[in-house]
Length: 232
Image 1 (cartoon, one colour):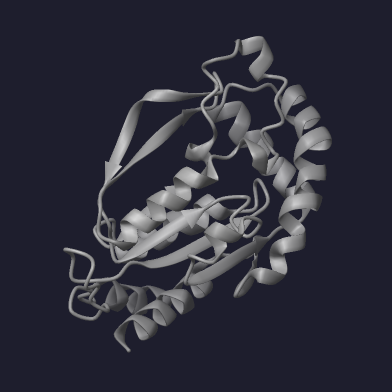
Image 2 (tube, rainbow, N blue to C red):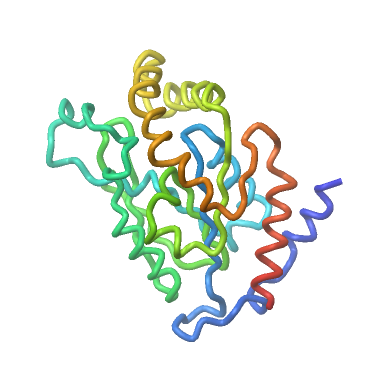
């Protein structure tokens, strides 16, 4: 029953419905959606499904993971000792500047992060503004400069045991980790940092959703909200 409605949403023409930004060469002001939650909560899945629903031509997906600070100036043996689950390792000023540039209709150059070597890659991603900007990351609600730039904030709430299971699968398959190192990192870094820097800021979210249920209904409701607010 949901797919026919999703199909109609997908066919909506955005260009003439969005508020015009006098400071931008584009015929719209981007609508910024922040998707926050713990590691393994389902943030990436939520964002990918929303992009699939509305189309890549309408949605720009930005990941906070790509804004880890570049550590090429220190040795690999030193990098592996760093707690990457602490927000101090994120280049928040760069992300803040990028959100502002997108608002004013400018291109941005997004760094790409190498999770195997803990450094930024030599390649970058050059993107232009789109009507909807999805920003995904652990610490979006922790950082005031970021969260106040978001039109709508989503927090995906998922139990810790489920998040660990998902993180094990992802990090072993995609990031070259072993199950032992993933579990050690989760117990010693991910879990305590989540309790300190992620979970307490859940109250700042406009919408808290379960990471255990399919996201289709929540995504559809969010899309309708964006379209309604953008058309007024």
